[in-house]
Image (cartoon, rainbow over all chains, first blue to last red; front, top):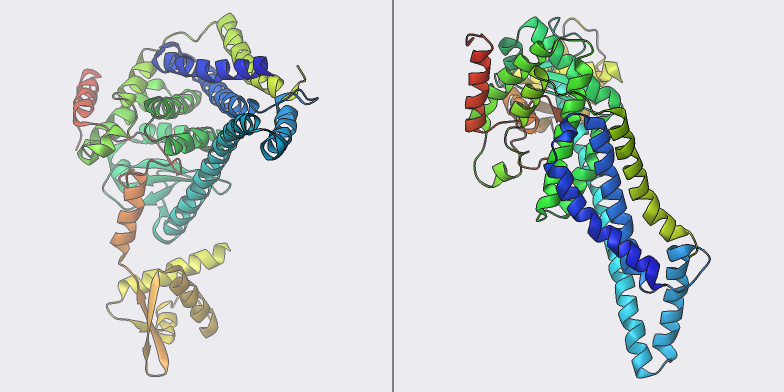
Length: 313
Length: 121
């Protein structure tokens, strides 16, 4: 039973340098959707492999791969611990400890996802209630809500009952064409439910607040999602309008940038600059063979741990 | 649901505009453009109090209602969250452009100028 466990361990360890390499690669800006898919595959693969490798140490040969083996092995280890000699008891207890570690990791991962989801839903509900009391429509931004505040804000509250919100400050800051570009960008977020893409990464970064890599992954996926919405907006609006809108809103927000601990939590330096330069001087999309390679890599990343966990070996 | 939301909003506007706590009857009287039953106003005020947007106090045999916080406080809460100043960078909202550092803002302003734009106030 050790070979599949070693394979899972190798996958769990191997995804880490792979994620680090992806975080520093430059090609993701050329095809954000493919890069997001690879990030998702890396995250899922790591989670499955890490949980499987820890729990799998207790596994014995069984019909349902590591999952079945873990269940059978746990039962056997419990019997050994209760009935065996001192040495056998110690080994059985050690194996059970790994099983507990695996179960704990699985519980943590499920728990943070659920907690993050609940937090987000509650925050959105509160936000929607406040909007219903405070915001109003404006003919300058059809379909969006306006909040009377001088600060420049433009955002969406995703969900089944989604809202796009523009502050009075943004209305004053941007011209009609730029506003239309902002609306197109936000509508892309709302339609494609980009928030659901971001949620697991946000949850992971809360579960592992000290991991630089997890934080990097979250920031990177957040930026890629923005680029995806930018690309979508470009189908309806010229790049220059979107770029100047970004520049104006970004530059106006400088006064709000906090220092110290909070600043460390923000996306990589130059996020807005990266988006603007991408809009004004676009690099060619990745060629089809490269995209096919990325999709295959993503599929392999997920299928290998799933296969090891479920197929008898 | 939509009508109820609208009503809550109209009644909060009345509370925000009033300098002193109002009885249900006074609130109803200030919503002149709507023909509302006394009980409807009472229900909505009750809901607002339960949600924490209105506060009520006994005045003899009647309740008097006032806003729990002024309008600006709620706008501030909304904007704090929208501009991600609360510190918990959650995925609840998706902002068009995130807050930037002073250095980045300088780069952005230069980029705007080089695009042949003059600063607008």
